[in-house]
Image 1 (cartoon, rainbow, N blue to C red):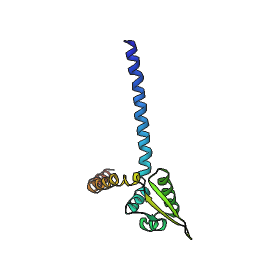
Image 2: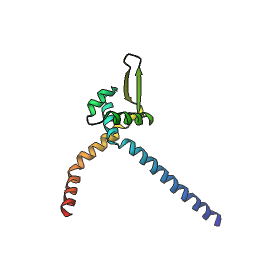
Image 3: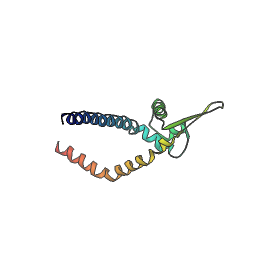
Image 4: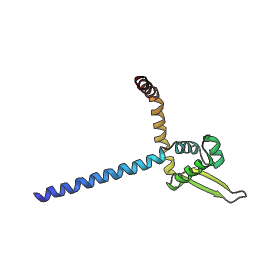
Length: 132
């Protein structure tokens, strides 16, 4: 019987470690996909492949450097594919991968949630400010 207790105690910390690791992995992915510029890039590329300057114009407000960093990060994570065409000057297009396209539906749902709950959130913020 003492052996059974030892086994249970050993399993519970492993489950907690696994849960913590899962939360940490989720947090890292939320950092990537919840980033303001990532959302804008995925939205822009949801319409199809685009060149860098077209994305820059479409998004507006993003710096050249920040768009470059965002695209590199998305490419590293397998959400965006970068294709270089041999021409002078070189033509480069960015497009969503299958994994990147699978992000459109959750982002759309989150956007709908924001639009639906924006008035309630705004009212809560206003009442909180007036109470201070």
